[in-house]
Length: 284
DNA sequence: CACCATGTTCCTTG
DNA sequence: CCAAGGAACATGGT
Image (cartoon, rainbow, N blue to C red; front, side, top):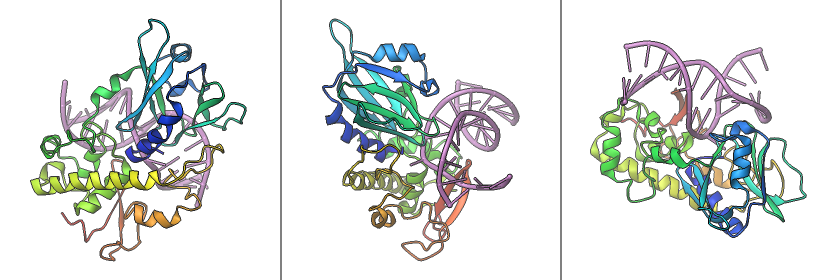
């Protein structure tokens, strides 16, 4: 369930639930999801820490923990990959089939479940240094965006997926932002005019903010393992079908009419990923 | 069986 | 070192 908006909504939800709680123990069931540490080092390193902040950077979850005595504070990073889910559940409840990590918090436990195991956890925050600006923060300026695009001949859609350009855009919102900006996904990044870059920047911010606003109104489901919780784009959970159409205007809508002009939406493949666009509204 | 899926990293080639 | 392209990772849905 990744991409910036879903991670942001998750962070807003978890922050009040986790802050103040202490990690009694950690159990790693699939050490594949650990990026740098061994299973033992990760489990031991986190135990005893108390959550003091839950934040987001790009698609990463950032947890700040304080520790007893003179031990320095620490951070844990989580990335949900393609299918990762993170939720609180009662300690005595069942574990989902693809449980990868469990954080024991006493009465509750925080469960990381990930069918494809593409998600990653680490105590090393170094990866954050390679991320581009936060799209919703002021440092994602038009000037910075121009600079990130001017020396690349990659198609703009592919460029938007590069997390060093701007952090948090994924395959869905890349198509959505380009549609809103009226820019063809195949246009080489260096060929965008200043006006187009400025417009694309606004579209990115609009599309992401909109998704966060929508996601924030959907109640998250922490009760059942593996059930849709409204943050999934697919597996249309009951009750979100009405908002689905408004939310995504071109993504996964090949051969359906463009909501602006009625032209059939096309699907193409770029960098081995699907791109959806309106060939009429996005001609340059 | 075939193809598709919200992401990143590693390897190769130029 | 950089840019770009493709495979790999792993599991499930259609």
